[in-house]
Length: 448
Image (cartoon, rainbow, N blue to C red; front, side, top):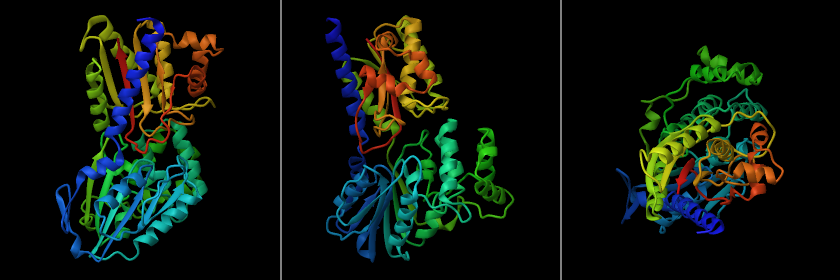
């Protein structure tokens, strides 16, 4: 096989594995799998709902996949007249019969998000025990569903979000802080919806499966505290730059002068039933099954890869090198797969994201070690990798050389956090567009 044919085959393999992962994480299909209708009874996991006993059934939701998830709910209840409000990211709107779709800013919250949050609460009305609210939650909800606590304004939250975004904070750290400056996250929404029966369907974008961290857990008890939020900011060396009103609010909470977020055991959670409909592990399993069908020896390394993208790249390349040299823990042809979500501490002003940064760091390591016939792929399942228009990127041993021929110094691009620009020039970026789902990232090393 000549070089061009071999490259085309690798590209085809990459595309098929990505497509398999995205099909498995399709939000509508995931919701449809957990909702079973038998006459007047709606079975949702271990919980059943007698629809004839409810005066009102409403659908509410937040996140990038809100419309697709809500559509599956509507399809499962075709004989009911449903209404409600969904909040999603701009450009992610998909019409759902009977529901109002509102768009807001992401990753930075905006005024549209605060207005949308108020409209969603208004749509819930005055919840009663014979109301059923089906609430769909997916990634992005923390920024999209924004209602700051009294005394903190939107500009404060925007500044706080910018600080956290640039710091390399994990999603757990990020959302621990956000829960404590919100009127609707960290379990507060459950207070607003009580005493209605609430079925919460979650498409998880949080590493490790902590459901209270998805969209900052609006309907789940919050195990974190004001002390945890302050510790996050101090640990990231951000406390001195926190907006004064945010610092004042968190300090008041630390001193017991602000109410804590609702905790496990609170009665408001007694009527909330939560089901995770899909997560990163589901997408990873489908990717590996596809790889096996293509003739690779599959190995799931982890679905909890976190930390700096450059450090993650080193771990990925190190294992690829071990497999190449010793055929352990599997032999080539092999597909080694990681799921999770890395972070980037911004030092430059370039274009890109955590996935293209991981790929570029991997390319430099592949060149240093001379690892031939290895392809590193890293992509965001929502199709949105940071400030670029891509989902991620692909790296091989010749990436650095090809970049040099195109006039780019790969190491300088990495230092400037400009990986997206470099991969776009090479044509090695991964373009999926809006995938409609969001279950973190997948990273895989293909050894031929």
